Length: 358
Image 1 (spheres, helix red, strand yellow):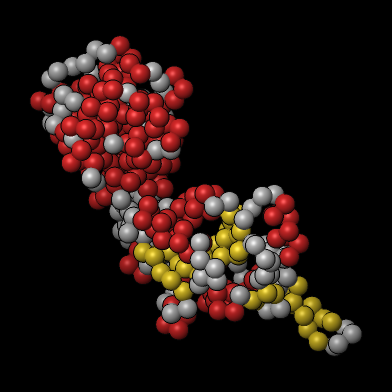
Image 2 (tube, helix red, strand yellow):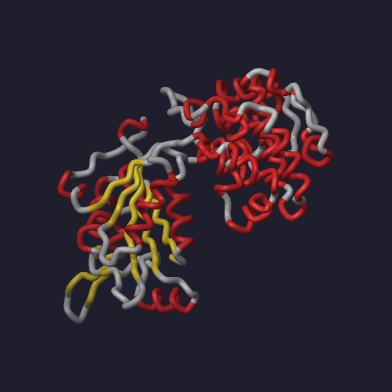
């Protein structure tokens, strides 16, 4: 399932008292940690992120020490595992609960995994027990890669798998496009991925490859490209993040899309070209993405006339292409939707093309 659907399922877990742990499976960079943090923020949960691949068993079970009075060994609690005092402090800060995120769980050393699994099975590790405080839930979420993701992973035992829920998360190019438009990603990256689909968004590495395309690495590439013209040097920078092949294809797409009209002239001054529907599919997709990126980036400076210019420009294209951009505000937060929903041209387009929105 995509991240949006995974978030809905994760929310149901958070809303269920004494829910079991749940594990998110998916390729590297697909956004597993991001969606966990987004759901946590929505419900005012704190997040403690434990990267198990970087921990030893002692880090979880605690440091062994000697109790000289009882002549026995004891384990000192790791500071990152919450105590009752920690919970009380989080409550004072306004948090409703805590997500204990055990990330990279199946790439960790086997003994570290065993200590983590004790947390899942018994809600305890060594002498430590996850505190139970009324009105404050502590929820266990695990995340890891699948064996098919070409990473080094250890198989989890069946009895353990049966003690938790499982969500398999996949990359979704439409979802990434909406997210990127909301966050202001570079429109050249978004138009390339909108046209290329999930095959360009995520490509697992071949043997020996260090840089390869994932939603995470494309986000990094977008940051590096912001405000910079495309040239050989910038292509080399992008290649360090998504690989040589993907960077070369992106460059070819940018060259193809260089026929685009002045986006500022279209949105800000209403100089709407009438011939864009005759361009290639790749150019039309780039046009839609560039216009929508501009509108979404205006923020508080967005005026009703800008929205009308945007709607009228995209209305020159086939509805299937126009819908790629015009549906974007409906997926945003309510404060940003208000200006669009109030615009008469936008209302008319949605009413005329209601079948595309269902």
